[in-house]
Length: 302
View (cartoon, rainbow, N blue to C red):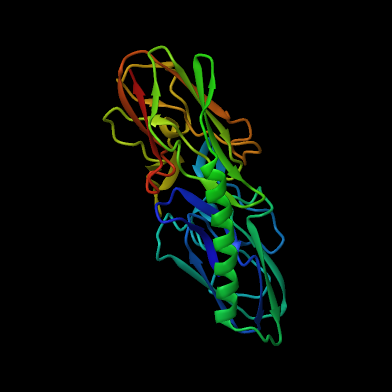
């Protein structure tokens, strides 16, 4: 099974499982080959674990969401999760199915969209081969990425008076996202406001001008009397800076922002971020979620 996929420069990615439905025999092992940053979770009909949990008046990252869970076999009961691939191109998750049945699975990161789910039908006998399943998956993946490239070819910034809008887009039905802010550096004049509008319900983003600073980590370890440390979400990463203008100095950050239908714990997260550029110069920025995929941009003010 192929999980996701992307073009060579990681600018465009598939957010689907390829193929979305497969038939296997009892005792077969399915190897999920990750080609994008997703996860695989079999919840056995139970509620999906939240990304964050509250305990003792504090908020922590939920280990059941963020780390592997369960054994190497599955009979339709219990919870099994691969954990996130974290962009590792060699990441593979394998699960052996020991009982006949129909088993649905999701990507916890993107499960609010119906497309980011799949089905494994476990039969007593099957007549397809692993090679045939992979060929079908590759064909579906290629079609998804081809549709995405056609959509990216028509992308343009939107100019509205003194404001330039950079839409961050994806298509949940077709199952793709763009991991770029724009095709070329954006050139504006002093006093121009740039607004990044999030229109992709599949992927979170940030707009972050580091200005020489180190990127803030997503979580801060909190030592415990026993066992490993708990992970506390980093507010510097989550929350926007109050700055509305930028002259090339200081850390300026949108916070985590999402497209329509953001998943908990961010149901009220903003869907846009605006910044007015006051001084000529060349300003680099990144998405903290997708730096590894090369999601960075440049605003040139002159």
